[in-house]
Amino acid sequence: MTRLIPTARLWALLLLAVILPAQLSAAPFAAYVMDARTGQPIYSQNADTRLHPASLTKMMTLYLAFAAIERGQVRLDSKFTISSNAAAEPPSKLGLRAGQQIELRYLIRAAAIKSANDAATAIGEGLAGSESAFAQQMTATARALGMRNSQFRNAHGLTQEGHYSTAQDMSLLGRRLFYDFPQYYNIFSRRSADAGIAQVASTNKRFLDDYNGADGIKTGYTRAAGFNLTASAQRGNKRLIATVFGGTSTAQRNQVMSQLLDAGFNRVPNRVREVQPEPPKLLAQRVVRRAQVEPTPAATQAQPQRMVLSASAAPRPNERPAQAASTVNAFAAAPESTPQQAVRQASALGLATSIRPRLRPAARSAAVEEAVEMAAAAAPQQSASLAAPVLASSTRPRPSPRSRATASASTANVVAEPEAETVAAAQPVSDASLSLDASRAPKRRSEGVILAAMGEGDLADPEAVEIVRRPANSGRNWGVSLGLYRSRTEADRLLLQAALQDGAALSQARRSVADTKRGFRADFVNLNKAEAELACSRLVARQQDCTVTGP
Image (cartoon, rainbow, N blue to C red; front, side):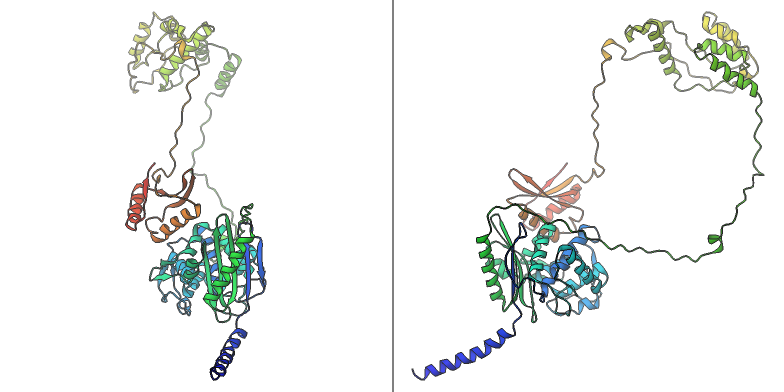
């Protein structure tokens, strides 16, 4: 027994000799806890110390990817070409090859879930053209979000001089991801996903499974940074976001994070006034290409242009200016003259030789209107239905003459019509007035004039007309409903999961969460009937209940 005591002391000294250097060489520790609902700090330790963020950097990479999708710069199914620089990134990696083309949705899954460095670099190069240009955008975005102590040199987070952040800044970025892009945030809670060329597992699976209420978001590790984690958790009405830098192992980091979140949930009130961050004013870079055109003398020197009018015909002189002027003066002097008096004045002024105008299609309706006006002038206080006696005695228009003989015959046949006889007598027959020999005879008119809806009961205001407008995209009124859920977050998560799994059938769909009395309904809208049926059949094949909704 006495011999065992010195042996135990010896092993203890050896264990201390191993542990102490490891602790002395460990990365600096920092922690920060905030109430996600208000952004107020709950706990802080070295929170503003600039440290290596490791793969927490990918949170900013993904933030810029989500922003590019929302402003229409790219789509989830946009294909990015993998460069040799991205393919050569060290692990953790997806295994991309140079020259390979892959959809953005798979790169996002690999970067967010597996923390793949090659996928993160491919996202940055695809959005900005180069990794250095993308790093500048990352730093500028950090300034816009209020991350005052962050600077980025790459898209993946591997150790590089001048690449740093803080526990407070990463917690702020995690809160921004939750509020600015709730439609994409649920990807951080997934345990696995299809990344196109491989099935990837989450690096944060252990913490998500062990801590009650955890739903994200990102892990990170390098030798210089230690074990880092930014986590988000919700219990009831409370939501906390916390960051730990410099953990000594995955287990120790998760244990510290659990203790920090437990203490935070005990300190924050159950109900507070939620203060959402204002959307950042992010400017999208626009590339303008200008065509290079060599200047020519014809384009740079102004030369007078001569217009030659030698081929144009000379205008005809006015044959009877005095006669036309007298006509205008005559009608101006007697604006109240009747049609019969106007015809007599026209004959006196020499207008008998003018060409007869063509019969207008509205001649019949003009006769009806003239009859109504005469009836209204004769009895203004009477009903419109009393116009029938006046219309019965009104004269019908005289048919146009076909020849000299026809004109004489028609003049003789209308002797019984006093007004027509007066007009014929006032207008002498001449060669010019009989120039309609080649014109087509008008169709025979009906003997009666029918006035419809002129009774006493029709004087009321017309009924209101309901105008039904069909939307411009009337063919895309179909949708797919995934059912009702207890929270908006759960409905958003399910919609995002379905969109990421089947982007081909739902590429034109819009995600919609409706707040109903029975719960939050998750819908895909803006589909035609064929797209909705195809999408629902694919969802059913993956054991997901759905219903096709129509207009």
